[in-house]
Length: 297
Image 1: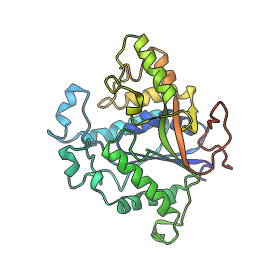
Image 2 (image 1 turned 180 degrees about the horizontal axis):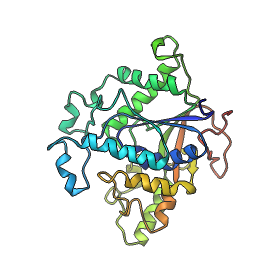
Image 3 (image 1 turned 90 degrees about the vertical axis):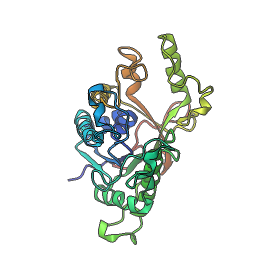
């Protein structure tokens, strides 16, 4: 019997899910909700932070994508997520690399995929899982990565097509997602993080950008609609992040400002509701504390 509450997360590369939503995913697994992750590429073009694995890079053996499947599997085990899939199957779409790089032109680059064709693969998942909640990126993909932008386009298109009974009835009965969220980061949280790093003598990751208005994923606090605070899941998110060693250095200042502060920061994740009815909230901005707020079980 399917869980009463179900959430689908659409991400571009292995590790994006843990950085953006690891605590959220672990929280809902712990609460008995259905959590499904749909990853669009294998992350073949990622930089490699483990020197002894440098030969896996795209310009050498080009085996990083396969290695990152194992990293994702370990991360999902740490979070307790058992339903994780690749869009159209592992390897159908390739990591497009950063904007303006030769990798954008690869014939399998996700950036070049036909949106409706790619969305059809996501529709099949939506109609099977029947999630009430969808989580993905905003229209600029958080920070402008081609695959993040494309994941946004595909996820949003899939949500529309999945609700249309005339579209591909062979993929199952139509399903309307009740709430769609985009990942976001409130200005006050980023500012506090920068101040904490400066107090520890660490350089800001945004040094040289000037005002935070130039950081694309930072939004005003009143744009945020939802905050998931899952302190009990901080350890699981930490373990999941450590499961992506080719991509993440957990002991670095960005994710661990001190022995405890880093874990506290990682356990709080923010969202912007862009479709559906906002549920009850609290605080000065009326932020929801649950992605399912306002939905009947």
